[in-house]
Image (spheres, rainbow, N blue to C red):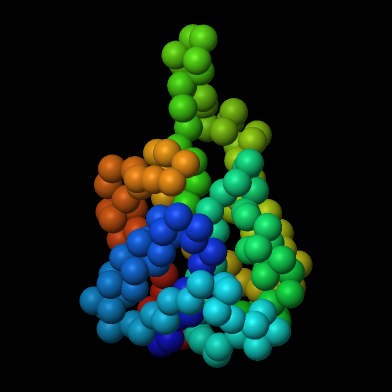
Length: 160
């Protein structure tokens, strides 16, 4: 099985997640090739059994470069994909100190839903999705992020 991991890391957090995913899948005997989307032409993506798309979140959306890439990517209907994003960790309210609920976070954080909407409109088939939180604008990644990537890798079917 071959996986193409396509990310749009800006500050290196997504690239670190991609390398950890590659390491986790190599332990299962699965080859993962990691690319930044700037390295590829969306109309001519490398062939793979599964594509993993990863984008940092900006203002609750995938960054513009990833949205444009996904809209242009040429993959046959039925192609399997997964999403693993890097998104801002929620912060407590400055006035009350209360952390936002999952429902409140879902109102302003749309990175994964937007990516799924674009890919599902092309007829692609999702196999997994998850996010790794970033504690500051440029990092670092949340505590236990490697375990989160390992859990994501465990949900990826290793047979084509």
